[in-house]
Image (cartoon, rainbow, N blue to C red; front, side, top):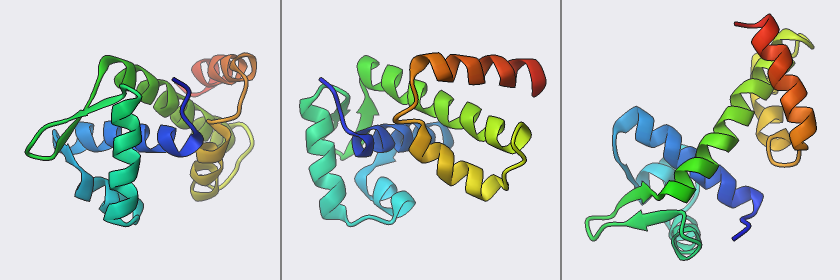
Length: 124
């Protein structure tokens, strides 16, 4: 099932919070994104129905295999595009992070692969 940009942002946020805190609940996502609990609840329902997350009775949220795969793809795009903007184009990091968050959802695979090659050659 194809998800929208907002769904991809939620998956990425769940992955980041899971890596940072070990576990994730809806309130953690709401606090991280500064969204209402009602918005998060609706979004989690959509992601659960799409098979990207599971939710325990305790409220803990887990990425499914498909959710983890999608979240890691988006997060990789975010990190590499940010690096590219900062290092190749000398964009301020705060601006680069915000721009990467938008670009990561619409960039073609071909363009992303070229950015990835450039970052791996020049930034690592």
